[in-house]
Image 1 (cartoon, one colour):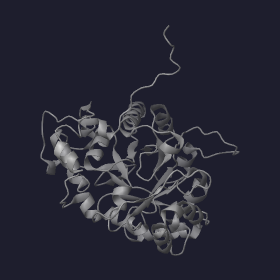
Image 2: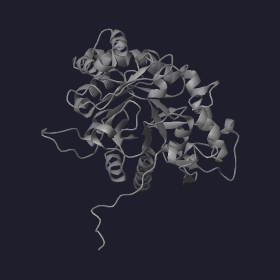
Image 3: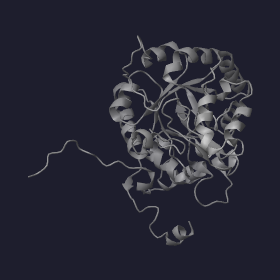
Image 4: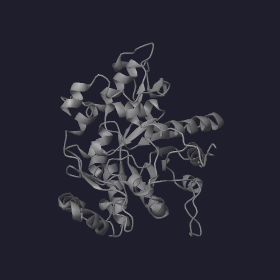
Length: 379
């Protein structure tokens, strides 16, 4: 007797299981454009630095701007809790592994100070950089007016999983359509991995959407609660929602794949899957300029009851310029990310990222191992 299905499972794909097919026409890489936009803000490269304390400080945000990208500053981190956050960062980096989670829980229990929120924003703005800040939904109503009044240019509202409809005991929770009307800057929300949820969030009037639940190197959400969707499938589904919303309204919402990107190949696959840009954490934590001193940790790590992140020792691999633009002496794709993207655009005959999103992709689980016996033996 056939057993009836309780539920249907569909196959989902991550970066290592797919490949991009070259185009029928090729283009010189130096003729391609890597620009992306969020609202009315235009970036030279489609790369954002994650709103993690070990990645983006006010000075790192300024440096990312000078390199053509965007650093997103976490307004609920050590920079808005402590007069000297760098002493705290050093303490976190030097703590024994068995003590680091309890230390992080203590560090992030210190209250957020509104005046420091304003100071951080003003510090970024004084450098001439575009200032992007991130808050969690529960603190958005309190912190976003302070940040925008101080000069913040973009507002990111981030949690592990974000929906347009949230059930809680709160009398009136955060309503994104009201937030978009209230603030005078583009609003980016996340994180999301599904078509229907993405479409509902776009219908609230947001300017950008972050895609990804649990793929980050310092995130343990998938292990702790079992929730997540591999990034290629998640990006494809959210990009499909963007196209549907654009066809209905004529407004294009920026889709940003957030997390799990280690190499230029991963970056290119995210964009070919439909992303307009990517948000990267750990590769930037490995730069000489990163505030984490060769360490990174998930921002859900300090949760007082159910930590969903861990401090990881990522080391220092090069300067921010080398990570983004080279020159590089490594062959593993971890440096010169922008150069890799421009070469991939050229191979696919794409003059820009929107054209690259039309490139053919295939399921290719052997793409990283086929013919690579000597490389695998070396590893």
